[in-house]
Length: 215
Image (tube, rainbow, N blue to C red; front, side, top):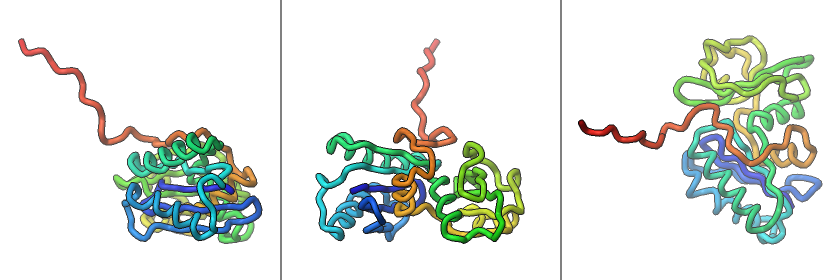
């Protein structure tokens, strides 16, 4: 049984995949409560399916890009479970998950050859990457001001909803789904990465520098 989780957005999402299909998927009901809600969501998903942790055979986790604190909670949880259960842990770019879902569910306009995925990076910026019509990433994700990346291409993700003046062609989905993350890992629809965070910018909290000597 594959457990997947993503904590790159304000709402944590968890899913279970039995090798054939997604058998459970849960989304947190309160935003920005990653540390409080992730473990209970995992337990609730397993209880719903009737399994225990020892039944898990692999872990999949969204590596972002996303805010430092949220990503850290998800990745630490995934790595800890993988270590304790001695199962592999696969990381996937959260933007890739959105792209595959958009390509596979028919939400893109007919004949789309290229589209963008833009998610909220806060500070009036977005995380952005471009994809071909099949959901294959064409370039590395960047963090950028919406005005600098304005486009008439179809745009998947919350960024298009937040900045419609720069991304007028908004299409769903808006946030990565753990269920689709499970599909991506199972079918290897995107690059499987080490479970390391994709921040794209330095965390707000930094270690203090050396103290200056008082003369």
